[in-house]
Image (cartoon, rainbow, N blue to C red):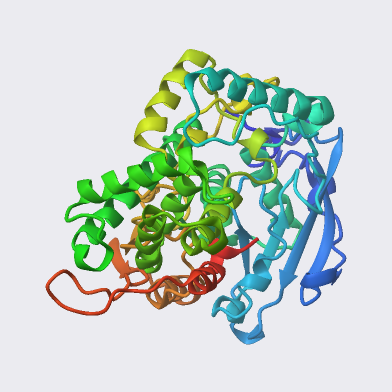
Length: 518
């Protein structure tokens, strides 16, 4: 199937002249591929980088029609004699601004040999933005809502979809992964590069896989960090987030159960989880200040995800169980730190459009059944949000093409990096993406971070650097260890009871590398 005219550039045309000859047909994108690029210092916090503005077609099937702006950034290779081209980057989202990624990567080994390229994807930031009107909140932000509240959640999603369509309907159907990949190839051509190299995080892994599918002869080395599952686009991807949070909480509870002498929360996973549920019920009946059951559920998901915070999370549960008063609520205050982190990760940018490029279920009864199950089984980390109706349930536009079925045919073997406890892209996503593309997989064991490269894991950084800089692939399936669990002795091994440190928790959360990027 012809995705858009540029894919037909290799077709040979017969000329009906007296001497038969062949020639490539004219490039329908020549206006965009040949445009000049004018670099100038970026603004504000990105002043260390160069920025430029380009144009691209809104609709690649009609390149002579409406146009959009694309804003890009660059940090030039430091070692000009070792330069091996450009490295395109994407931070995920969907809808994350990419202009700052070259700055984030500016102290990595990559800057020695690559021009690091950041892009605000179509619909985002400095590019032609998709701006949706905000819809009024209807449903209360409750992690375990009663059945009677489900209809309000659906109404809020419907209102949000209608508000977005009213203010962005003209360009919205063209804000898609495939078109973003096509924009990347326009940028490649403008920069005069035959091939790009690629580093994508989260949703950026799917974008990179789509680019490689559409332009296999234009992609060289690629790293997909914290991969999206190729079979879960997009509804199932979000449902699986809640399941991943539950797995992390269960793993934490097993660890705590081996340390009952220190925390007093039970001697087994199930006993600890029972105590967690008692605290949740207690906070629902009597919140401690602003810390209620919903924020507690959020804190449980975040705290269990990040292994270095396990002792702090156990101390939070212990203190809340003891009956804190608002005037001296150390556990509640620490819990709020974790809860806010979880809420910050729920949405971004053009999320409500790109994730609608695939079909979602439309029967609300199916969502309500899921919400009942997720409310009871997966409350941690705001799990019910992942099961509730979203804007895509009420999609008010028709995507002009189906999602790209990704595959690797013509570009080199790449690398997928995935952590075992990741909640935003569950671990199974990494092996699935690696299988689909025939890539090599780096598993980061006992780790919950999302976005590993350049985030403080030396093992991951070394493996990725050796591949992107030197071309040496890691093993077909290799491992790195994650951030260590707290050094709290098991029962019978002595040691003092650990202390709760909200400041230490915040320091860790602020230093999570890529996961902590705004």
